[in-house]
Image 1 (cartoon, rainbow, N blue to C red):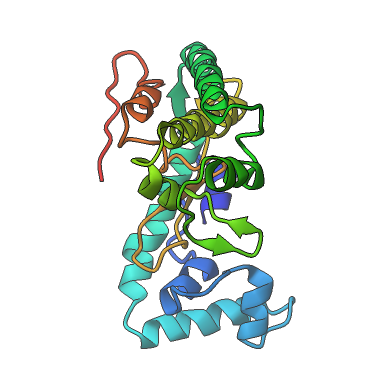
Image 2: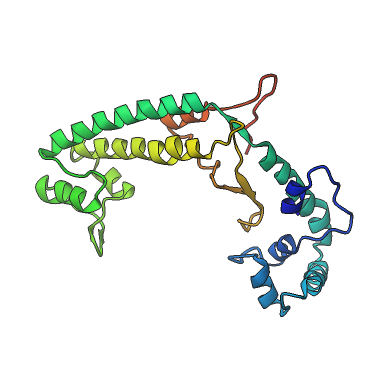
Length: 247
């Protein structure tokens, strides 16, 4: 439904329209995929039996008492999500770019502090080299061990933060690096010619019915840290409009 609506936004969907993907999602919200070929295999229909597949799914949805849910909520919602994807969300590209420059400057400064505390040059982004510095050279108590050596993930480092100042600096460097690569650079590439990001809202991702977002994922923009909150300021409303963030 959403794909058809986006191609024909001015047309009103007929009352008897049926979305097999949404129907299959209601029947089994735990499935890994609702692709048409997978549904055809699961319900014993070949590629030329699309109508049969739809009828089979419709009957099962009806047997489960969910036809009103499909007709009155899920399918109309698909049209709304299509409209949201077409509209997109405005992003201040120049502000985001300047924010990236500032984060890069801070990351480089923290990197130099880490190197000074380590007493040698090394690749902070390499778990193996970082583990060598922390656990062999500086003698910090090693935590969880993986097949590639001692773990240097965030959970492990946070438990070591009181043992040496280098740990806090490494965590800060990682925070800056993620903001730069995932958000500053990643989001900038996703800004279309109209100055807006047109994400894809996924209606069949979670068993709870919550909508997810992809390419890019706009639901994981950081909010718990001050740096993350600054990033959110570049998502703006058009003049004369209000941007509402609700959960």
